[in-house]
Every structure is written in C-alpha cells, then in structure tokens.
Length: 226
Image (cartoon, rainbow, N blue to C red; front, side):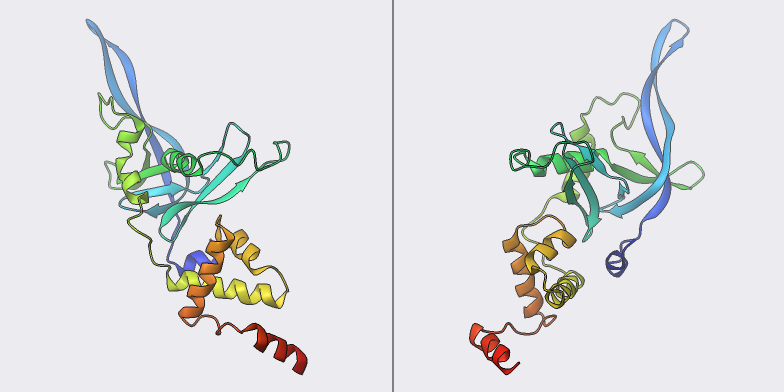
C-alpha cells in the first residue's frame, strides 16, 4: 500500500473469497437445484461503498487487446491505468475509441465482492456474479444494483485536502526536475485530461498548498535577477 493510500485511510484487508453456484442434484423422483457456497481464493480486497470491496487484482483485457486496471481511489473504484502487455497490440488512438466508462463499470462489477460473515462469524467476501439464493433469475446488473449506486456520482465531488496535497507535491517535484507538470499529474494520479490536471493545480493553489502563480512579467524579472 502506497503512502498516499495510507494517508487517505484506505485499508486493504486479506479475506477468503467464495462464490455461489446453483447446482442440479438428483433426488428420489427427479432432480432439484440447490445453492452451494464454494471457495474461490484468498486475496487482498479494498472496502468501498456499503459492505462492498474490490479485489486487489482488478484488471481486465478488452477484445482489442487493451488492459484496464482498477483500484479504489478517494473511496471508490476508478480506472488507474490503460496499458498493453508485451506481445499485445500497441495502444493507438484507434484502439482507444471505445466506451471507457461502460468497460470500467463492468470490470468493477466482476471484481467486487460483498462483505459478509460465515456461520461461525468469520468475515469473508462473496462474489457477486453467482446467484444469491436457490432460485435466482436476476441478471448480473440486477444483483449489483448497490454497486452501481456506490459508483454513481451525484454532482461533482469536492477534491479532498489529501488529494490536493498530493497534487502540490507532484507539481513541486516536477518543477524541480524540469518535467511537464500536466503529464506528471496525469501519469501519477490516474487517467485524466491535461485540462483537468490544470484544474487540480488551481484548486491546490486556492487552498494554500501551492504558492500563488507568478505572472509572466514576474518570471522574467526573476530570470534577469539570476
């Protein structure tokens, strides 16, 4: 877990993960369907929303060959990387023409578990893709309605002080190393437009995490003094 995640209070936990399957069994006089709980894996998960958690290895490959990585940032799952593996097609503008939001939401649903306890009171995670009860004809979207509610934005959520401190830290480092500020922010804080990165800088400055912006005349004067 990174220093940034620790400051934001994100605490990944290690849990046994299970899945439910509806199986057909033979009984006297015919067949019946029963729900079985089967072990899936033990792994790290990051809680979010209400009694939900995201698997630590939440990645998926699109038909085009592009990989998406999802992690919990600022309390909710977000896409943090669009990448390709060795041997996969090179990422081009053509390959990037796909509905990113829909692909990310589907990936989140497939990698989300519901937090619950077993018969002995021990915590565990339950995959959402399987049925919840013996005869469950709901679609995956219906089973994960609360996931969609947790991801749905109601207006634009204010940026936290911790996030803006991270922005200020990256800005100062980039300037000291003479690197493009916008590019460093996008690379290190997740997919975003350069215009959005510049808004982050303005908000970090407005909250006092960065010094006031210098005018062009002042910058030229400073160079002349040096």
